[in-house]
Length: 68
Image (cartoon, rainbow, N blue to C red; front, side, top):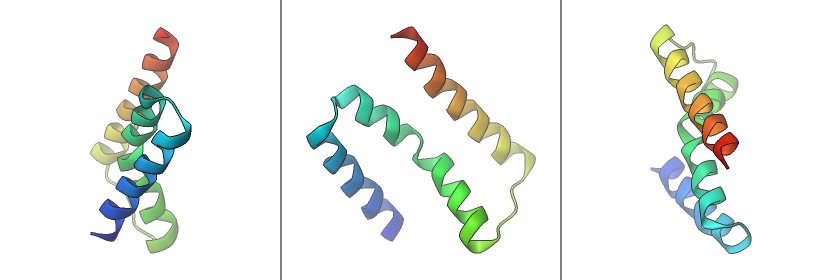
């Protein structure tokens, strides 16, 4: 629950200083950043599908930015 509240609060703060499209794009990276923090702070290991999903999210963000 803490991570959900923190992510929502961060999104609302970002909307104050960034365009909505940019803030939404950054919010799309939330699941990937959650995986990274789980690896760093909790010493979690990731399965292949989790890594594939993270890669697809990152590729989607990069692709959407290149379209602009």
